[in-house]
Image (cartoon, rainbow, N blue to C red; front, top):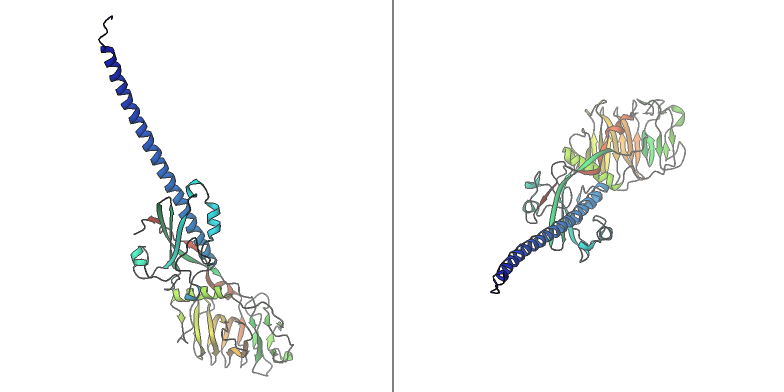
Length: 384
């Protein structure tokens, strides 16, 4: 014990070296875990941002379905976008202002049709060039959202489907700019009660009592029975332009969208973009399964013994002040008629041309909102 040759110092130094090695290993492990925790935190911050971007754009789509080129969304949205078809950048910036976002946020989102090879499964290459609206008319599009936070990028995609809802048509047997009959006989031409528990209104936008150019029929001959004719309707168009686009999309999806007069107007929603169409024989739809025909720009004339079960809607995009819907012969509309603007409805024949059936309003549905398609939401890499 009295020996001073230093063997104890050597042992002490070895012990200290071992302790230092363990300490450095523990410090390295702690530093690695701290970095991993930071990486995970940034990844979560990025996911929260990209998820918010996706949900914001889904809200935009739900408010106004991009069913045609005229309602197409921007090709891409980012923090500099000011279009109403994009998320509001200021709102997103206000929601994401923590330390991870202090150096700024970068995001973009786009809508792409599900045409071609991306009908049911999305790839960036397959979706390239797809328009930013529902071009194929099947009521579905893809949404692709991407966000980058502190160099970490995450991408989400999901397919969105338009949902159907009843259209808010005025519940009248006739809604038009004016109305007239072509028969002066004492007979029922418009049965306003028909299959309803209570008679529906025959309502026009002009404001002169019958007989006049506004309501051109002889009031004392029972041609409108019960006589519910009234002027001064101020409800505006039966449908907004967005709702009309929704009907276009439904018709495209059903294969009943036409740019000119088709051979048949039978179907849940038949949309005729343009044409002065006439039908004189046969029938369309049934009393138990009524439908709807929409004339965008043009007129519709029914004659002979033709019968239509459902709602006839003249959108009158041409701005006509003449008759847009005309009935003659023994033709019938069992349902209701609506014409926008100053366009009129003409009826008059050997029997009732218009018989009110309020059930047709419940059968008419258009795309009104949107929701994600189950099983299509997933995360991909930026190049997938």
